[in-house]
Length: 258
Ligand code: ADP
Image (cartoon, rainbow, N blue to C red; front, top):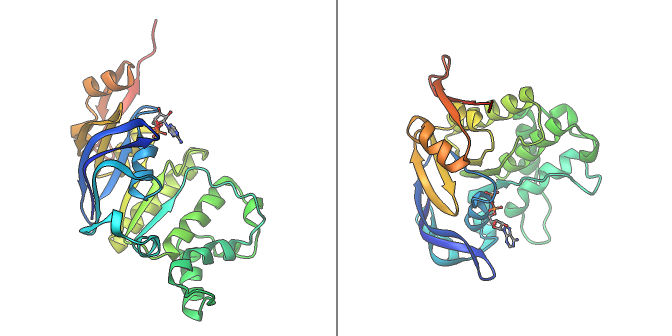
């Protein structure tokens, strides 16, 4: 579905990603983890064509991303960026309608079908009741659900998210990730999300890619990636890893000094 082949990328002359290769299969729920500055956002920017690779190739459904027009890209891939603060007081329904832009002809208007898709997307994220509210007046959790509805309305086959729950409390974190998992399981949507919280990553993602210093330190199932030696080396923090009794996935405990 999404393949990075020997990608080196970054900004101006600064190489951030160094010879990165990985393959994300259709229907995978993959977490990108790693310390601050390890290159997670840069990887997402390369995958969304915001920055160009210095070297290597990226393939989306077997097509070379370099040759794919942005409008076509937007019919396959939707992105939920990190900072979703809106400067303008758009109505929720209009924000979600923006997700239909790749399908609307130039100078055209949204059709009844577009509106139906938008209302269904709002319903899916339990935000239909918010449709006439202004986005800048919503709580963080409500706003994030609306942004996800906009991504759903785009009818993508792959969804990329940059730390979608950063400013949310634990109940909203779980709500958003339950929602993502439902989209993954019910519609086979491929999901790639950057995550800060290693335990959230462990519980929800089927595969993890651990970045360190612009290279892939480890990738595979959470039980393969989250071993204490690797975590201690990469995060330079002492940890204990035990199995979560409910999810049977690794759970990381921090160890206090003294
Ligand atoms: P992460 O998302 O893992 O915290 P980033 O991909 O944001 O890491 O950053 C990786 C490196 O790239 C950092 O050293 C950061 O300073 C640098 N970087 C990020 N964005 C830019 C930019 N727009 N211009 C120059 N350097 C950048």
